[in-house]
Length: 475
Image 1 (cartoon, helix red, strand yellow):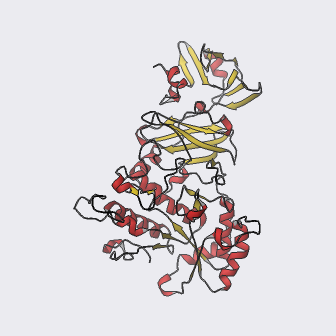
Image 2: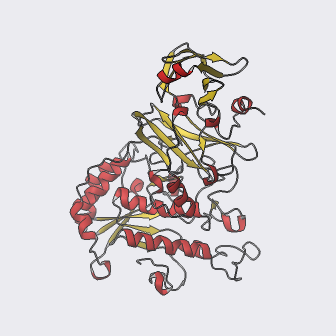
Image 3: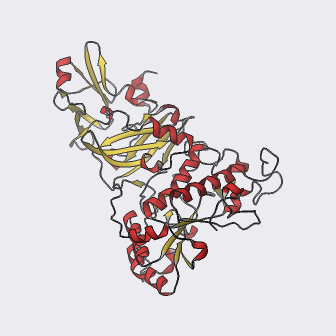
């Protein structure tokens, strides 16, 4: 199959190898694949020519013509459906944006700021404004960015494959905050999947499941005094009284609407403070599709739920709490995730975030899937997520949900439904290692931040330091 046929069938593994600018005989050639276009122009050079029977447009250039062409050239095209004209800089005129070092650390499971390069990031590259997309999807034939900006057509913006890292990237010029997008993935065996971005920092209001572009964090915090005091906080020798609340259940408007993060900051927080509590613990605020789950079946680990507002609205909530003298804890769910097809489950058409063996990768009682704690990139996703909430939202601690289910391979399983570890025991050694790493990293990076285990069995030394053989939780 030649490159054009692979493009037209959506099976080209490396579109940059064919699209964009390339030497051609004694000159150059510009190729653009635009299945929506009736005609295309290369600004500054003239019309491009359609390759017969295809949606590929080409323009050959002499050396002199090529020397006058900007590095990041613009295309203009006429839409087939309504005849309107549009223009943009070609995404296939840009070099790779992700560093080899970032990819190496991620594959090693040690990139503690993974959200800064994976996901979507509005930025300026070589003077051109746009959005850089990056997603981990190893072993697939193709990944494309789809959204309102390209008619959700997976042939429009196929991504660059970054080799053995399993990461795909693409910088698309001209996109704006609020633009909706997902990834279209052609799996190893031809499955066509549409997935929300695992690292999306904002998602649409349910039942919509799209990811949304969000501006980089420029929130101006006013809690510097609180953060400085937290670094010195010794929770074992100071009063600690925690008010646990589900934001969607505390109070609603007469018409049934949720209170927003900002409204809750004005009404809930002063009440909690007046009752004498030192901290407020929020049931999960990460994005989730089902109201009835109270947030415990997370689909967007890096996105505050849109039910109550925007990411900056949630930052305002935390900021207000700190200025009132209240700490904020979050319930956090690394034990399992839902089977919803738009999210993490079978992300590449095969198990990726979940353990591939259903005896270790499924919670049958809960109808959910279990993370593969032994896979570096999955551990990285989770550890970075914990750090993300503390760093980006100034959260003071995490209450880790369902720790008992993580520790035991036979948790809620009958004989024959679980597989022993390498020593023949029922302890989940990979989950234990993950929890220890999580606690070590959180406590090292954020002195004063606490981790709380919901552990309902008699597991020893849950809150002892890892160097003593414990799990390393604060409490």
